[in-house]
Length: 184
Image 1 (cartoon, one colour):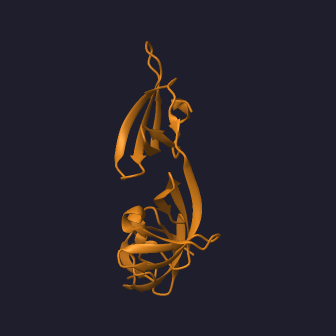
Image 2: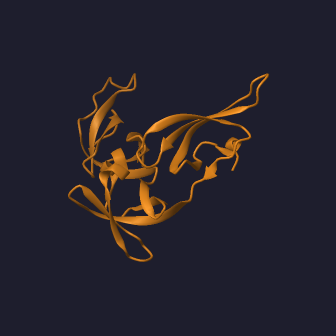
């Protein structure tokens, strides 16, 4: 694959490490050739790096396999998942999930990325529904500006929600950022 094919979201290999492009910029100069600059995330350790390539340079395609898995339960600091086709169970450290671990719900289907037959990343659905189990009541007069308050969800995660959300409401949460999206 050529360096100009490195668009946002593409996974490539540099040396022996898989990277995912977070940001892409194609820079053309008057005298020299075009350069591709990418901000890429190392999928093995999570670090983010800036990389530059000549537009005509080739980069190695990463051999990434995506599989669905079902979340079963938490066992200490490990999370146990099951392949829905082979019924094989495997556990994953919290480091593969990051902050999205607080949004895991038993029975949910997630996508697991494998690099060289080893899981390197676990992605939850982007939007998930949760019930608000506790929040302070909204007060009249707080509707002029965007007023946010803390709300505890059915999975014990705490997110900021608008003042009109009350106990018992179902809301959508963006699992990538942990932010309120809308009422469901």
